[in-house]
Length: 283
Ligand SMILES: [Zn+2]
Image (cartoon, rainbow, N blue to C red):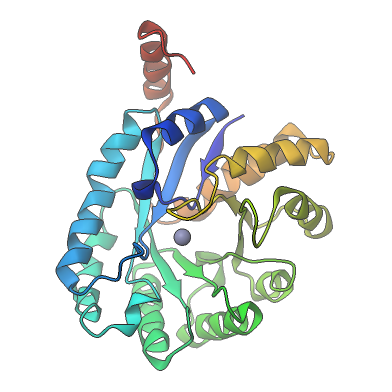
Protein backbone atom coordinates (compact mmCIF):
# COMPACT_ATOMS: atom_id res chain seq x y z
CA UNK A 1 0.00 0.00 0.00
CA UNK A 2 1.41 3.40 -1.00
CA UNK A 3 0.20 6.46 0.85
CA UNK A 4 0.44 10.19 0.13
CA UNK A 5 -0.46 12.31 3.17
CA UNK A 6 -1.51 15.59 1.54
CA UNK A 7 -1.68 17.64 4.76
CA UNK A 8 0.73 17.06 7.64
CA UNK A 9 2.88 19.49 9.65
CA UNK A 10 6.11 17.52 10.07
CA UNK A 11 7.96 20.51 11.53
CA UNK A 12 6.15 19.69 14.77
CA UNK A 13 6.68 15.89 14.59
CA UNK A 14 9.55 13.60 15.57
CA UNK A 15 11.83 11.29 13.62
CA UNK A 16 9.94 8.37 15.20
CA UNK A 17 6.89 9.61 13.29
CA UNK A 18 8.83 9.59 10.01
CA UNK A 19 9.89 5.99 10.71
CA UNK A 20 6.41 4.72 11.56
CA UNK A 21 4.93 6.60 8.59
CA UNK A 22 7.44 4.95 6.24
CA UNK A 23 6.67 1.53 7.74
CA UNK A 24 2.94 2.15 7.13
CA UNK A 25 3.55 2.94 3.45
CA UNK A 26 3.78 6.75 3.42
CA UNK A 27 6.08 7.74 0.55
CA UNK A 28 5.08 11.37 -0.09
CA UNK A 29 3.62 14.27 1.87
CA UNK A 30 2.53 17.89 1.57
CA UNK A 31 3.32 20.16 4.51
CA UNK A 32 1.16 23.30 4.32
CA UNK A 33 2.56 26.51 5.76
CA UNK A 34 0.47 27.35 8.79
CA UNK A 35 0.29 28.91 12.24
CA UNK A 36 3.03 27.72 14.59
CA UNK A 37 1.08 28.13 17.83
CA UNK A 38 3.10 31.11 19.02
CA UNK A 39 1.94 34.12 16.97
CA UNK A 40 4.66 35.64 14.78
CA UNK A 41 5.28 39.37 15.01
CA UNK A 42 7.33 40.03 11.89
CA UNK A 43 7.43 39.00 8.23
CA UNK A 44 11.03 37.81 8.67
CA UNK A 45 9.84 34.97 10.90
CA UNK A 46 7.77 33.66 7.99
CA UNK A 47 10.75 33.78 5.63
CA UNK A 48 12.82 31.59 7.93
CA UNK A 49 9.87 29.20 8.27
CA UNK A 50 9.27 29.02 4.50
CA UNK A 51 12.99 28.39 3.96
CA UNK A 52 12.91 25.56 6.49
CA UNK A 53 9.94 23.97 4.67
CA UNK A 54 11.78 23.86 1.35
CA UNK A 55 15.18 23.19 2.94
CA UNK A 56 15.68 21.47 6.26
CA UNK A 57 12.33 19.64 6.51
CA UNK A 58 12.60 18.37 2.93
CA UNK A 59 16.07 17.02 3.71
CA UNK A 60 14.87 15.44 6.98
CA UNK A 61 12.00 13.65 5.18
CA UNK A 62 14.37 12.40 2.47
CA UNK A 63 16.44 10.60 5.13
CA UNK A 64 13.37 8.50 5.88
CA UNK A 65 12.44 7.67 2.27
CA UNK A 66 9.62 10.23 2.04
CA UNK A 67 9.24 12.90 -0.67
CA UNK A 68 8.41 16.22 1.01
CA UNK A 69 6.40 18.96 -0.71
CA UNK A 70 4.86 22.08 0.80
CA UNK A 71 2.39 24.89 0.26
CA UNK A 72 3.26 28.53 0.95
CA UNK A 73 0.99 31.34 2.19
CA UNK A 74 0.14 33.71 5.00
CA UNK A 75 -2.31 31.65 7.09
CA UNK A 76 -5.81 32.96 7.94
CA UNK A 77 -5.18 33.40 11.66
CA UNK A 78 -2.07 35.56 11.29
CA UNK A 79 -3.65 37.51 8.42
CA UNK A 80 -5.22 39.56 11.21
CA UNK A 81 -1.86 41.01 12.35
CA UNK A 82 -0.72 43.93 10.18
CA UNK A 83 2.91 43.22 11.12
CA UNK A 84 2.63 39.83 9.41
CA UNK A 85 0.90 40.98 6.23
CA UNK A 86 4.15 42.33 4.78
CA UNK A 87 5.06 38.73 4.01
CA UNK A 88 2.53 38.81 1.15
CA UNK A 89 5.20 40.61 -0.91
CA UNK A 90 7.51 37.62 -0.39
CA UNK A 91 5.05 34.77 -1.05
CA UNK A 92 5.20 34.96 -4.89
CA UNK A 93 8.94 34.24 -5.08
CA UNK A 94 8.35 30.92 -3.30
CA UNK A 95 5.50 29.84 -5.58
CA UNK A 96 7.73 29.03 -8.54
CA UNK A 97 10.03 26.71 -6.58
CA UNK A 98 10.18 22.93 -7.08
CA UNK A 99 8.28 21.14 -4.34
CA UNK A 100 5.98 24.12 -3.68
CA UNK A 101 2.69 22.66 -4.90
CA UNK A 102 0.00 25.17 -3.88
CA UNK A 103 -0.84 28.50 -2.31
CA UNK A 104 -1.98 27.57 1.20
CA UNK A 105 -3.26 27.29 3.82
CA UNK A 106 -5.49 30.23 2.97
CA UNK A 107 -9.13 30.88 3.85
CA UNK A 108 -11.01 31.87 6.99
CA UNK A 109 -10.39 31.55 10.72
CA UNK A 110 -12.65 34.10 12.46
CA UNK A 111 -14.03 35.51 9.19
CA UNK A 112 -12.76 39.09 9.70
CA UNK A 113 -12.44 41.74 6.95
CA UNK A 114 -8.62 41.36 7.08
CA UNK A 115 -8.96 37.61 6.50
CA UNK A 116 -11.24 38.24 3.54
CA UNK A 117 -8.72 40.63 1.96
CA UNK A 118 -5.72 38.32 2.48
CA UNK A 119 -7.68 35.27 1.29
CA UNK A 120 -8.69 37.07 -1.91
CA UNK A 121 -5.17 38.39 -2.59
CA UNK A 122 -3.64 34.92 -2.26
CA UNK A 123 -6.38 33.12 -4.19
CA UNK A 124 -5.69 35.61 -7.01
CA UNK A 125 -1.97 34.71 -6.80
CA UNK A 126 -2.95 31.07 -7.40
CA UNK A 127 -5.30 31.95 -10.27
CA UNK A 128 -2.69 34.14 -12.00
CA UNK A 129 -0.09 31.37 -11.84
CA UNK A 130 -2.50 28.53 -12.67
CA UNK A 131 -1.50 26.94 -9.36
CA UNK A 132 -3.55 24.88 -6.91
CA UNK A 133 -4.88 26.53 -3.74
CA UNK A 134 -5.37 24.84 -0.36
CA UNK A 135 -8.30 26.40 1.50
CA UNK A 136 -8.66 25.74 5.23
CA UNK A 137 -12.31 25.84 6.37
CA UNK A 138 -12.77 27.32 9.87
CA UNK A 139 -13.33 25.22 12.98
CA UNK A 140 -16.08 27.54 14.25
CA UNK A 141 -19.11 28.14 11.99
CA UNK A 142 -17.81 25.54 9.55
CA UNK A 143 -20.82 25.67 7.23
CA UNK A 144 -20.84 29.48 7.06
CA UNK A 145 -17.08 29.53 6.51
CA UNK A 146 -17.26 26.88 3.79
CA UNK A 147 -20.04 28.69 1.93
CA UNK A 148 -18.11 31.99 2.21
CA UNK A 149 -14.99 30.24 0.87
CA UNK A 150 -16.91 28.88 -2.13
CA UNK A 151 -18.27 32.39 -2.75
CA UNK A 152 -14.67 33.65 -2.79
CA UNK A 153 -13.67 30.97 -5.31
CA UNK A 154 -16.48 32.18 -7.59
CA UNK A 155 -15.66 35.87 -7.06
CA UNK A 156 -11.98 35.38 -7.96
CA UNK A 157 -12.95 33.17 -10.90
CA UNK A 158 -10.30 30.51 -10.25
CA UNK A 159 -11.04 27.09 -11.78
CA UNK A 160 -12.65 25.10 -8.89
CA UNK A 161 -10.64 22.07 -10.03
CA UNK A 162 -7.57 23.94 -8.76
CA UNK A 163 -9.05 24.44 -5.27
CA UNK A 164 -8.99 21.99 -2.35
CA UNK A 165 -11.45 22.77 0.45
CA UNK A 166 -10.00 21.10 3.53
CA UNK A 167 -11.21 19.97 6.97
CA UNK A 168 -14.70 19.16 5.62
CA UNK A 169 -17.32 17.01 7.40
CA UNK A 170 -20.83 15.61 6.88
CA UNK A 171 -22.33 19.11 7.00
CA UNK A 172 -20.03 20.76 4.47
CA UNK A 173 -19.43 17.97 1.92
CA UNK A 174 -22.49 18.73 -0.20
CA UNK A 175 -21.83 22.43 -0.89
CA UNK A 176 -18.17 21.53 -1.49
CA UNK A 177 -19.07 18.79 -3.98
CA UNK A 178 -21.53 21.04 -5.80
CA UNK A 179 -18.87 23.77 -6.12
CA UNK A 180 -16.60 21.54 -8.25
CA UNK A 181 -13.73 21.98 -5.77
CA UNK A 182 -11.71 19.05 -4.41
CA UNK A 183 -12.83 17.84 -0.98
CA UNK A 184 -10.32 17.31 1.83
CA UNK A 185 -11.00 15.48 5.11
CA UNK A 186 -8.73 15.55 8.14
CA UNK A 187 -8.95 12.42 10.30
CA UNK A 188 -8.32 13.16 13.97
CA UNK A 189 -8.11 11.01 17.13
CA UNK A 190 -11.03 12.60 18.95
CA UNK A 191 -12.57 15.54 17.11
CA UNK A 192 -13.98 16.41 13.70
CA UNK A 193 -13.77 13.35 11.42
CA UNK A 194 -12.78 9.76 12.24
CA UNK A 195 -11.96 6.77 9.99
CA UNK A 196 -15.35 5.08 10.21
CA UNK A 197 -17.31 8.25 9.46
CA UNK A 198 -14.96 8.87 6.52
CA UNK A 199 -15.68 5.42 5.09
CA UNK A 200 -19.44 6.06 5.36
CA UNK A 201 -19.01 9.38 3.49
CA UNK A 202 -17.06 7.67 0.69
CA UNK A 203 -19.69 4.92 0.42
CA UNK A 204 -22.33 7.62 0.04
CA UNK A 205 -20.54 10.19 -2.13
CA UNK A 206 -17.98 8.11 -4.06
CA UNK A 207 -14.24 8.71 -4.45
CA UNK A 208 -14.07 11.41 -7.10
CA UNK A 209 -12.17 14.54 -5.90
CA UNK A 210 -11.89 13.04 -2.38
CA UNK A 211 -8.66 13.65 -0.43
CA UNK A 212 -7.87 12.22 3.04
CA UNK A 213 -5.16 13.55 5.37
CA UNK A 214 -3.99 13.30 8.98
CA UNK A 215 -3.40 17.05 9.43
CA UNK A 216 -1.05 15.97 12.23
CA UNK A 217 0.57 18.94 13.97
CA UNK A 218 1.61 20.04 17.48
CA UNK A 219 -1.83 19.23 18.91
CA UNK A 220 -3.34 15.84 19.70
CA UNK A 221 -3.20 14.14 16.31
CA UNK A 222 -1.97 10.95 14.64
CA UNK A 223 0.34 10.82 11.58
CA UNK A 224 -0.92 7.29 10.82
CA UNK A 225 -4.56 8.33 10.31
CA UNK A 226 -4.18 8.01 6.52
CA UNK A 227 -3.03 4.38 6.87
CA UNK A 228 -5.76 3.68 9.43
CA UNK A 229 -8.41 5.12 7.11
CA UNK A 230 -7.04 2.93 4.30
CA UNK A 231 -7.52 -0.14 6.53
CA UNK A 232 -11.03 1.01 7.44
CA UNK A 233 -11.81 1.33 3.71
CA UNK A 234 -10.78 -2.31 3.12
CA UNK A 235 -12.90 -3.45 6.09
CA UNK A 236 -15.78 -1.40 4.66
CA UNK A 237 -15.64 -3.25 1.33
CA UNK A 238 -13.49 -0.97 -0.81
CA UNK A 239 -10.88 -2.61 -3.06
CA UNK A 240 -7.09 -2.15 -3.03
CA UNK A 241 -7.50 -0.05 -6.18
CA UNK A 242 -10.06 2.19 -4.42
CA UNK A 243 -7.61 2.70 -1.56
CA UNK A 244 -4.81 3.52 -4.01
CA UNK A 245 -7.03 6.06 -5.73
CA UNK A 246 -7.89 7.95 -2.52
CA UNK A 247 -4.55 7.58 -0.76
CA UNK A 248 -2.26 8.13 -3.74
CA UNK A 249 -3.69 8.94 -7.17
CA UNK A 250 -6.15 11.64 -6.06
CA UNK A 251 -3.61 13.79 -4.16
CA UNK A 252 -1.02 13.23 -6.92
CA UNK A 253 -3.55 14.41 -9.50
CA UNK A 254 -4.56 17.48 -7.49
CA UNK A 255 -1.10 18.68 -6.46
CA UNK A 256 0.44 17.51 -9.75
CA UNK A 257 -1.45 20.37 -11.39
CA UNK A 258 1.27 22.67 -9.98
CA UNK A 259 3.86 21.07 -12.28
CA UNK A 260 6.17 21.19 -9.24
CA UNK A 261 5.24 18.02 -7.34
CA UNK A 262 8.26 15.99 -6.20
CA UNK A 263 7.96 12.20 -5.85
CA UNK A 264 10.76 9.69 -5.37
CA UNK A 265 11.79 7.80 -8.51
CA UNK A 266 11.63 4.00 -8.43
CA UNK A 267 15.42 3.96 -8.27
CA UNK A 268 15.44 6.29 -5.28
CA UNK A 269 12.80 4.19 -3.52
CA UNK A 270 14.71 0.98 -4.20
CA UNK A 271 17.97 2.56 -3.07
CA UNK A 272 16.35 3.71 0.15
CA UNK A 273 14.79 0.31 0.84
CA UNK A 274 18.19 -1.28 0.18
CA UNK A 275 19.94 1.12 2.55
CA UNK A 276 17.60 0.32 5.38
CA UNK A 277 18.24 -3.39 4.90
CA UNK A 278 21.98 -2.74 4.94
CA UNK A 279 21.66 -0.71 8.10
CA UNK A 280 19.65 -3.53 9.67
CA UNK A 281 16.83 -1.04 10.21
CA UNK A 282 14.26 -2.24 7.74
CA UNK A 283 10.91 -1.05 9.12
ZN1 LIG B 1 -3.01 22.32 8.73
